[in-house]
Length: 445
Image (cartoon, rainbow, N blue to C red; front, side, top):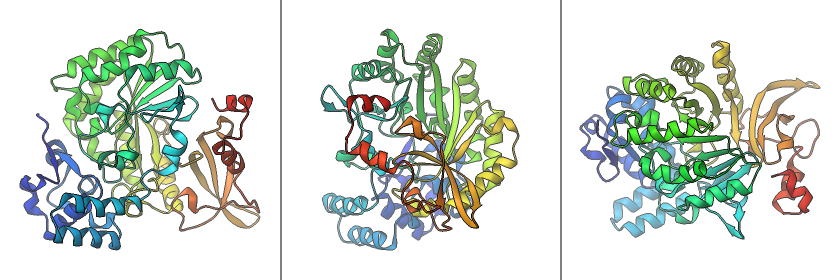
């Protein structure tokens, strides 16, 4: 199969569009001018049920829906589209709306971008001691866009918010200098949009030079779900597998961090063949997704998805809470409901599926997991812990938040049991204000 992409400019050429109502087509055009829209022939032909697109999770996962913008934002975009075809005018209104959608949550620019040799490196993020995120410039698009994507600013021309790096040697030098780093996560966008030769230009300097602290290379990708032919029959598939085998033979763990949001993504013959081939050369596949209203907000869906992943020799890894950006209100569930979905799904699978962690919020201080709801001194509280933290010492410490049935994100929570602040807040503020001695800085590296 050859890849064919569909965007706002050509989606009406799809034969399936005739099954959509005028309101649905309008929503795709209005919302798609604010949030990114792109799909492909594999998603359209293999994953979406066109007999009932209005209720199909994969349609909602890839095609913009009216509810993804507030009524105010939707009407503002609709008015400008009805009154002008001037691209600059349309973009101006779109950017005003985008700036109100929290384009870079959790301090990604302010606090995650490291300095190296006296300069900020916009192609790297280094939030946690062991892991560096690398954004190769040629990988800052995807085979198809997820409507929930928290990295949507990468794809809408907001260059001031875009992460991208071109220099392969920079990554090697940075990791070699920061000896606490053991893992590199290639992310985007989607690194598997790149040709194998381009991807190799970033990986080979790591393999050919002495970087003794590097133990794991991760690839964050939706390609297995949206374009498994990348690993089967693309014109550079064999070259890509040669590179993967080289990484594995070097003794470096190679992990595909695969994004699967619904069981249907695991059901085609193509994805099964792709997974089997990757596993056959020693590539590990870990799976993750946000918990999404309208898409997978059911214990049955998650239990089925984890079981299918394990049966295909993948490792369930994370259930995330949708980040506080973009179309969060459309997708987010109350935290109590999210925990209930996770707990009930977890109870329905065997121990080999229970490698999954969640529900987890990737927020400013770290990855905060909801452990449950309990009662202390006759008061209901959320029980939380950090799976990752800006300070490694925060990891695995339980803490408590006041019970709030309407909370959907960490910022909605307040400390419980009479505390004025969560245990990490003073240190976090201190860290961000850079009130640190050289010895203290060492604790975070």
